[in-house]
Amino acid sequence: MTSPLLTVSSLKTYFFTPRGLIKAIGGIDFSIAAGRTLALVGESGCGKSMTALSILRLVPEPGRIVDGKIVFSGEDLLRLPTTEMRRIRGNQIGMIFQEPMTSLNPVFTVKRQIGEVLELHRGLHGPEQEEEAAALLHQVGIPDPRNRLASYPHQLSGGMRQRVMIAMALAGHPQLLIADEPTTALDVTIQAQILELLSELRRSRGMAMLLISHDLGVVAETADAVAIMYAGLIMEAADVEILFNDPRHPYTRGLLACIPRLGEARQRLVPIPGQVTDSRENSDGCPFAPRCNEVMEQCRHHLPPLREVAPQHQVRCWKAL
Image 1 (cartoon, one colour):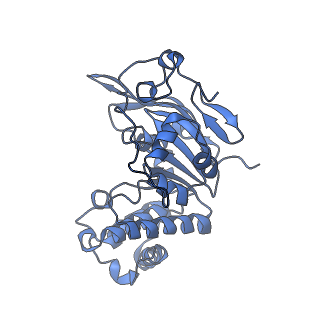
Image 2 (cartoon, helix red, strand yellow):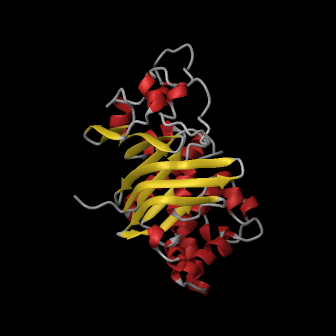
Image 3 (tube, helix red, strand yellow):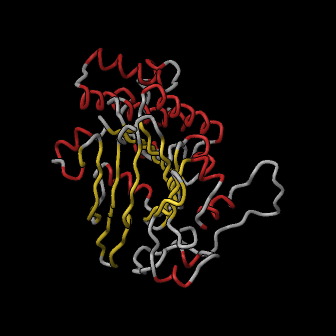
């Protein structure tokens, strides 16, 4: 069995604010092998995007990674000098950010923005740089790529802007691609096209992909494995088919119950009651306990470990252990 490309162990990222300590990531473990896609799934504020920023060592102030290891290609990224980390970002690890209109610079052309990445990570200049930029636009399915290089972001549709972001993320030939909600604000047809594009690029390039999403429908179509996050912790992790067919954690079952199913007659979808736990609360119990319909007294006072309940299936729940 080949070793994983990325292994995250006991990762903790905290924010030290005047209003108190916020445990954005409370100690998580996962790994991704080359050519595989892991999806991080959960409600807004659960720590998905902060996990991506931690991997890239881009946690904003007053946040700080306080513990753990992030081993990529055999190296612990948390121990590397800043200059070496800059070389890895965009080169070996690419990132597609959530909203392309805020990630792309509105005053620079597509050519200028892709060109900067190609110059920084591959040392390309002049005609060679333009040729490679046009080739990248062609790879991500943008028609008439050479003319599109002269476009500004506002002249492109949402789907086109997202394809430009993907082209920029791929410019350094990354081994790992992090996609943070890559289909947000796109209509359903364009969403499907972007997801198919990402899957095809992953297969053709042999990349690993970390897909961050709140949409289990997207995950079912794209991912090989899934990790369900809640309040900075992974609650359940399994291969995608196992998780959808045999969800063990009450939170996972709650998320799945919110999804309408074709051919299934239901008068209404079942929401998860309550609100996401405030990460400033220093409870020793399971953070999902206040919203759980299967809660036991033990759950309120003791955090369950994440344990394997079946091959390739881990759950953080006292009832499942």
